[in-house]
Length: 346
Image (cartoon, rainbow, N blue to C red; front, side, top):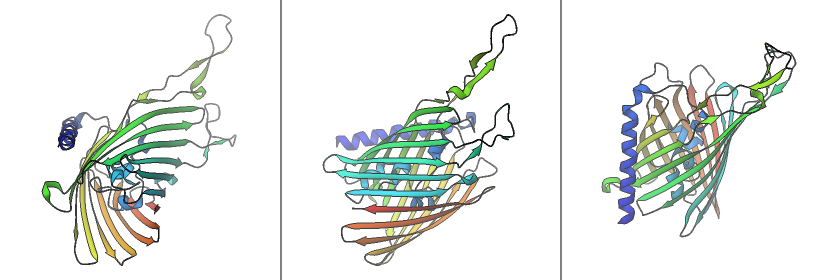
C-alpha cells in the first residue's frame, strides 16, 4: 500500500510539472539548449515506433526512453549495441549492458558517442583552413541506471548521466538526471500501460579551455603582449517531461499488436506528439516484427524528422536470445536516419 501511495504521489507531481511546462510554452527560448545529443534516440525498436514507447519500452534500450522500463528486463542480463547514421554525416554509436540482481533490482551501464569525422581547423589567422590541420569533436555521454519492479504493475527507475563535449582546445562537462515510472494494467485493463518520464535535469554547461585565450596588446605603455580569456556563455540542458500510453493485445494465436502514443513537453523547444505501432508474429523460437511511427510538432512550420519504419527478428536459442532490429526515419533537408541494433539476452 505504501509503495502504491508513493508512486501515485510521484505520478501526480510529474503530471503537475508537465502542466506547468505547457503553460510556460510561449516563453521558451527555442534553440538555446546545450548538450542536445541527449535527445538523440538510440535503439531501432523504439525509434521505428516514432519514439512513442514511453509506456512500454523495456530492457537496456529503455534507458533512453524511460529508465523505469529497465526494471522490466526479461533476462538476467542483457547487452546491446546500436549504430545510427544521423544528420549531416554524424554517426551515433551506443553500447550498454545490464544485469538483474535478485531482491535488489536491475543495474545498467551505457555509453553513447557521436562521430563527427575530421573537420578542417580554421582560426582567425587562417579562416580558410589552408594549413590542412584537422580536428574531431568528441561528444560522449556515460550513464549509470537503476530500476526495479515495485509491484506486479509498477516499475520505477533513474539514470545519472555524465556529459562531456570536447572541441579543439575547449571542453564542457556536466551531469544530467532521468527519472521514470511505468504502470501496467492501468485502470484494471489488461494490456493498457502508462509511462511518465522526466529527463535531462541538471546544471547548465559552459565551455572552458585554452582555446578561449586571445592575444591582447596594450594600447599604452610598454607592456608586452598578454593573453586574456573570452568567457563562454552557459546554457541549459534540453530537459523534457514525457507522458505516454500503450495498449497491446493478442489478435490471433500467433499475432500480437501494440499501439502507443506520447506527449513531450520540452523546456527549450515546442511540444511534440508521437504515435506508433508494432505487429509481432510468433513462430515459436523465432518472432518477427513490423513497426511504424510518426513524430509531430504542430507549433513549428517544418518538422525535420518525419515518419519512421522498421522491422526486427527475435531468436531464442538454448541459454541465449538474440534480437536484431532495424529502423529508418525520414528527414527533411538531410539524408534519412538509418539505425541497426543488436541485443543479446542471457
